Length: 239
Image (cartoon, rainbow, N blue to C red; front, top):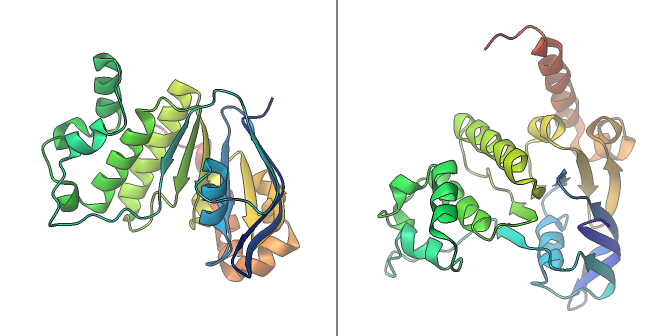
């Protein structure tokens, strides 16, 4: 059974229809990335899946007993209400000591324990948010634009870390991203959203779809070129 099955989902806020006719399946261990223009309903879809906002039609089925780790797109931190990284992580609940230490080491967060959340850089904050999500020992990680605001080296490090986490834990990943090149290189499945699902499938399938090209134009062509260029060099690299 799939971890999550979304069928014919509609979300309305007042008179405004944010999503309609959305179908999606997330299988164990796969990376599914949602792309689309601003206002396409990407964050809304994630919030509907975690149960943070109600759906007005359709159904969302989740495998019984499934654990979800979620990192929001934005987290509001008050400078006047200090909270340390250690305190923030403790809010994820109790865990065996060894398991907590393992997560903090894996995400390179152990050295930040005494730091204030409000003082962290973008890359540090994303690692702390990921660590907190991982402390739930999730079957599914839901990440809303986890690399937003990161420079390229920090973004590359984050994606490497994500790949390691999936390999070691077997957790599936559902992610929203704006980086089309990385999406095409890192995802098992891509869902192109613009109020509804315009196209979905394997990266090669989506990148060839007219609706994807229509939505992203020149950016779509550039991402496809970079993806092919990377693959053509894969056989020639030496570590």
